[in-house]
Image 1: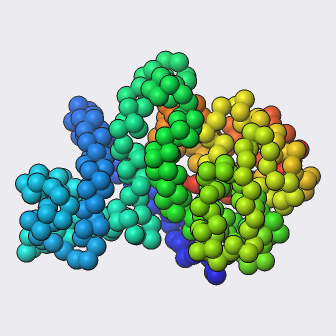
Image 2: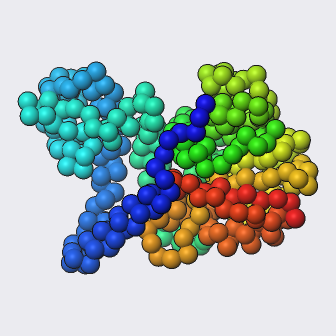
Length: 362
């Protein structure tokens, strides 16, 4: 399987620069109080998208356009209220209304379908959920204390709560999997994972990323490692991807052990979840399992050193609120890795917000 076709990095960076410049121009041209009001009400749009996902509107339109009465009956909604919801979403390019009055999908609305190749429905359901909103209402508390708010809201830290409330935990797992599909192609296109004979995906969930890597690198073998309840569905996922015969599944906690014998150890969006003490524990366990020639591959957002908008700046506050973790700049990752016994070799940017940080044991 060849590398996915993606726009060249210079093109992506040029588009990002234009978007940033236009956003900055808008902020300068619009009176400050108007620009601020637009930002204040942005959260309402999030909840409108969440309502559309919860009602299953995109799935109801999967077979073609529908009139308001039929659509309302299908999704179990009040027709007038549904029209008002869709009127807002249509104004932002999410759904459209045809000249004959019927509602239809747009590219953004198709991403709300549960059966879309790249579906964000579960991500919308999680980020718009009551418990996620409750956590964000405590942002000021997190800023005052520098600590996550999970124990205040739920009585236990965030990840512990996900293990006890399995309905929410499974939604979270599906949400993270769906978000992962956004960066799969860019990661495969930006790095030669096939150079490694055995790749260990630490905290790899159901194996979506590792499966895609193995499918793209037919001579490589993989080891998927995560908590027992997380890898429970991994055999079916790996079989679906056609790589089950080249991937071993092991379970456990990366705070205690990881499989030995890998040529490379991949951690995607793991390090940013934890404080430095626990990162040191994770990387210490990894270093003990690695040979001197093995490589550590961290897939993370890397914050810019300047004040440009960046998705990582949002996720950084998400980490502060929920896990006590944080996003970092390249220099901060270099220093963190050095303190944990690793040398950062290089950073490989992708056309997505994700970067690959390649390191070796010092």
